[in-house]
Amino acid sequence: MKFGTKVIHAGINPDPGTGAVMTPIFQTSTYAQDAPGQHKGYEYARTQNPTRSVLEQNLAALEEGRFGICFSSGMAAMDSVMKLLSPGDEIISTNDLYGGSYRLITKVYGKFGIKAHFVNMSDTAEVKARINDKTRLFWIETPTNPMLNIIDIEKTCALAREHGILSCVDNTFASPYLQAPLTLGADMVLHSATKYLGGHSDVVHGAIVVRDEKLAEQLYFIQNAAGAVPGPQDCFLVLRGIKTLHLRVERACQNAERIAHFLNGHPKVSKVYWPGFPSHPGHETAKKQMRHFGAMVSFVLKEDQYAAAEKVLSNTHLFTLAESLGGVESLIGHPASMTHASIPREERLKVGLTDSLIRLSIGVEDVEDLIEDLENALK
Ligand SMILES: *Cc1c(COP(=O)(O)O)cnc(C)c1O
Image 1 (cartoon, rainbow, N blue to C red):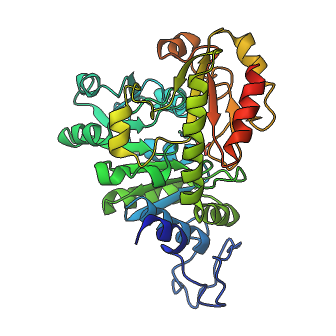
Image 2 (cartoon, protein in one colour):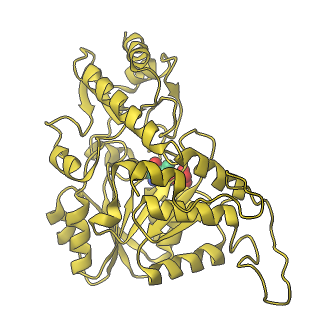
Image 3 (cartoon, rainbow, N blue to C red):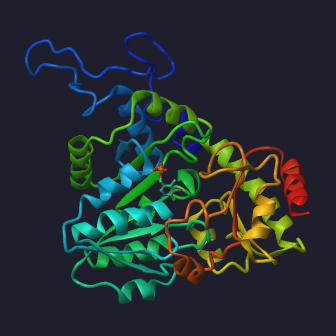
């Protein structure tokens, strides 16, 4: 099955009881048993829910995996991966990681004796140099947020495998339409389904997809034991969002390309980060592992100060000033004070995340209107 068919059909069948074409929202906490232990595969809704099962199967197919495991948020999904580790284990991750992921690794798991090294993961040699006999996990995010650096998934995951290290790719920014990390050697793929998968800024949800049955068993165990499960209504919303994933991401990528070129030629802009430019250091890798270059664009103003950024941020009308990304509507954000406020300023500046850096999540509106909106705000 090709991608555009999978989003609509994979794991999804009309409800056997009623023929309902749309997967019903099974809003129940428990299920009747015929005799003790005799049930239809569903006992208690933390452990199993039919709406969630359909979504888990659909996600597994989209990511070219075998098992999908859903959570109440992207962070809850990541938290479950972290629970695979033990005190003394070490992680290697990227130095411009999503702020919430950085916070979970350092502030929550740091005190349980898990040590993390944050390096420039675009450089495989830097990653290799940090490997020791305690390294258990590579945490990869590509494209990175908000600098849009590209990490070579195939090379980095091969390095992990060579050393018996687990690898997890946060595929939130690309979506499974653009990039399939499991086919490139990753052990786990993670999504904040809050973003492109849900796609309509109306739900918070997370998921992991894997191929290995043992790993899946461990993650299902954690899902049930810790209980950060999504409700059935949230699963329904993600399922409904996924049906147009390919159409939305395709259009958003086309819009992003136009906007990246518009900003690149603008007199008030000093730098545009978008992996589609041949001058972008990760361009060739992006071309190799992604279908398009994504719908996220970041840029820095010539007047590299917060006050200048603030003027742009408060003067757009179509671009809404808000956290998050990946919805049908375009958003504008200021990582230094919003999504990445939990990262110390000197750490931010080291990776180029300056005070005037603005991040755009491009939606599916008419691109001429979006460009006009940015033009006016920059004026
Ligand atoms: C939003 C996001 C997360 C966290 O997901 P939530 O659903 O907000 O918990 C993790 N990684 C990336 C790249 C994100 O953008």
